Length: 217
Image (cartoon, rainbow, N blue to C red; front, side, top):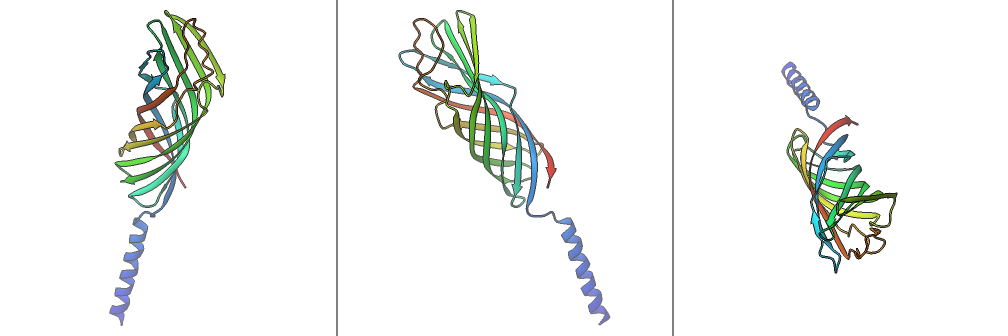
């Protein structure tokens, strides 16, 4: 009888220690992010023969994410991002236009891989253009304007994205916008002889960034 009690006590202690060492299956935590963006575009604005220039944007692109891990191999996250996106287009040999917006974005993404190491995520993000800025260069002379919720771009800019993140929190992200960036009408460049009416303005980007875990709940 004593031997049976000793075996039972030993098993109980073993299971208790294992339970203490095993992390919970589901975890909720927040993450702060920042990214540097290299964006590209494809613009059509006949009869102009346009040329799109790559746009490098190191700031201000940051966000706060809320993560929920189903296990150590899968999870989901959402959050709120502030992002600087836009296009640079040469309308002819003497006119260049730079158009950008600060967007508020709400992502929803599914993660797989090692939740504490190398992982892949893919998802959808709804972005809303809140602050517009435009610079027009005519033979090197600059004209600029800005506005809140301007109608020269679409306000709602949905996108899909995929990203890879390593154990240290560094990531590379690919994003494609599902709608045109620019409105066909309302383009105010005020350059004689240049009728700028974009009929198609696709935008996509690649970025590198960091993700820092903040707090467990």
